[in-house]
Length: 619
Image (tube, rainbow, N blue to C red):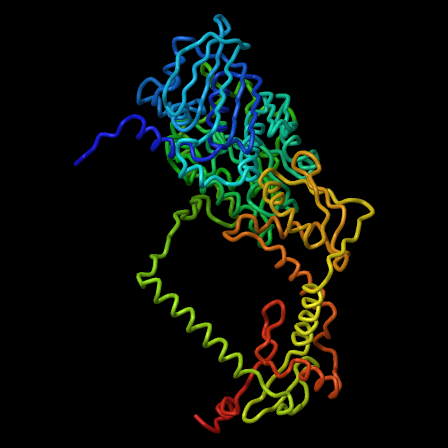
């Protein structure tokens, strides 16, 4: 039997597409405030946004008669007909956000137009109250309490308060940057996290990332193939430990787009090493008719009509600036260029209550024609070379069809075999006869019909490492105070991640605490690692925050111990006496299956039969 779902049910289902976490509530409400023409927006959250979210603006307000309509699904002031989807100039347009939020929370809207009085309307779990006269200044104040109180399954899967707050803070950072002409105040638990004054992009970036960031960036402003590319990109030597420092805005909307991401990554590929990522705040202003913003209900991505034009435009501009070739002069911006980043200058056209959107000088068709004759940014290629756009589709291998029990038994068998093999590889040191050395690096031992080549550095390194690790595991935690505390400034997501690690850091000897905003102060370090490079250590911690498993700080300490063991171990090329060589194998206790702390084998076994095959004695 087919059932027709009630509004109470299908609104909650729809809410899952648009509203999944507190940050998405903040995103939708702030976008509505921006579309309402607000110049001052205040955002407050409590308990990571789970208990309360309040967004206040000084925009155009909602008339009394429209308040009930604001809670209806598919109710919007930004579209009238289907054709409007091809020229969307506002951040919001689907008309689903308010209805979705109201269906899974206790929501209240209080609004006042400039000509009218203030009225409010509350909605609890999708059930509307009555419109009431209220007090308030011009604009709108939206309060969302007890998010997901009536959907416990979704509430159960929310992250901790700190992590949810970190994601909201990261989202607010994007708003500060995307609309530097608006004054934002953002408070989390009554603490001011961000405050901007609507005085330009440079000020907004300094508020979010610190004043030193701009000194390490190139300011760009280019018009390429009808696409305006503007903003800031990090210099070749300015890199970050994870991907959270890349921000892309398409027609004023923050998105994560794989085509643009691939273009930037490829442009930086010659300058960044593994686990290093670029910093960029990039604005793309494109004709509305060549970009589809209606890809997903949360509007987190967009689809371009021609990925080659987008990829080629971004890649050619960024790579030219990084490479420092002659075309870079065309793309580097001066302070008075007046291009991009949300400035209400003549290059923008505006619609009523809409965010400013740029009007490129070329039509899409003209851009396609120009692309045919444009010189590829890849040196040495012909003028008709087309830009290569990587295939960004994810391919997932099919899951195994074997029963879980079979897999479990296979794993047990593998572990048993590995244990038996390790026992077989362990020899009695008394049976190993020392035969000499090769290249002052490899020690030669003989036992039965096998020869063993021992890497003296790897073996000694492993022995020292084991000794240091045993000492560390049994040690009493001692901290060494620093003469000058180390201040680590990170972004919101990194701070939320680090804050979660504070107890573990303190347990192993660090004295860490919050230092205002998204900064961390380190006042003491583990005494037995007092000479460690703190910048490198915390860089390793933060580089792992995107991995599928949680970082284990003990593993990082293990790496530090491995480095100490490597420095103390006998080096390859150092000649050992026969007595020292025999002592080394004795300390190894005949374990020729050892590996050094970095994973390299300590010993290699060569059978007599293998040598005889080399000399053609046997075939």
